[in-house]
Length: 117
Image (tube, rainbow, N blue to C red):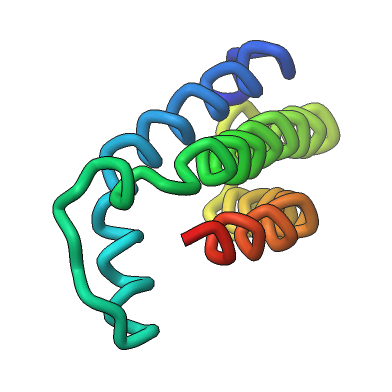
């Protein structure tokens, strides 16, 4: 699918699914961090969703970059090979490269999100 979309469309899909993921899983992330730090758990939404903004920016930007870069890399490989379908190792290499590139943006934001909790 990502090869059928342009970079802006891939980026939009990536940002959207990243933010949805955060909103669905933020409470589990909070509980994981509190357990790791030996802190008491809470069901208070003000505590559960503390840092959600930074987490949305983090995950949204990471998945946005991954989708946009991954789609562009897949298109480039398709154009170079002349094939419609990528080989499995080509799919994997495009995904790995997109993940490495998005990690440079996500690592500092992940630190900020954890420190806010």
